[in-house]
Length: 414
Image 1 (spheres, rainbow, N blue to C red):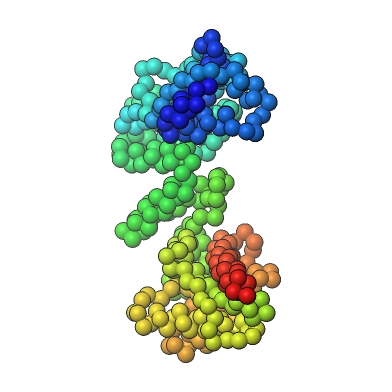
Image 2 (cartoon, one colour):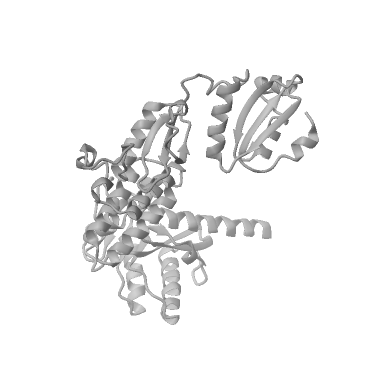
């Protein structure tokens, strides 16, 4: 294999084709980066199969594509056409299933196989090939319950059963505008591209906008979509914030006047008083706002006294907030029990700040509040508890990371 050829390969998605001395195709593959993928075949260690194949490779052809998705489609097509001996998938005539989206005002979304694509339909997006048609259809059906779409290849004159089942928004009878339908399709595309976090961010922003405009019914529909996405267990979606469930549940449980959108949380970290430090993390609408995270080196406390350390950092944080006339959070969460809660409550009172504060104990995850003696015990599947746990754990992680930095500096200093 010509080494100069390897260095000239572009760092782009595409198809690569390995050939032997006689010009016969040995292997066809796809890549997000042609340069990285092709070079990987010629470095050690290699599997026996790749070792044998690579020894026969004399020349290389490649095709640059616009995207990895396009590369997948071209790969399947070329493998079926040439049947290379070292390819083990996409060699049967039946082909593997794809998800296709048509290019029209009200696009169709459907599952098909490469050999069955209707040539009269202009397709804007392909997704796949996928190895399991059954799982693919099940996934698409779940998506359709969240973002309805039409599946008829010709728009009918009246609504069909899918409209009554809530699976199609019925563009045939004018129940949805072109833009609203396009938004649905764009959301589906984000999902199929694996951009679930971007999708939830987009939906959450729309939900807040509709809520601010007092379009509560539409906002609730988007809330339901976010909840449905979370149940599909893709990536970390189940941990993402739903302000209409977690925050309202928290508001009701804590008897707050408003839904807590900005939440600060504190944690103290030290070993026998050594390298004592603390953290404050800030969440907005249930998502980490890392630009407002703060780290504190303990200045006024010697020895082991977590209460005094906590009082120091809370005083420093909110005294500065008052001096700079910055907005206060809607809620403060403390890692600890009733003692930590009372410590912070006194410190805020001394500053003249009226602010809801709760603490969450590590044991049994009990929540302590000022207006009752006994702790609040929530069910393990409570959305409000999950939110508080998530914020508490992030504060602990951030404090521990800073403590490790300070310990390392102490050790190096010695």
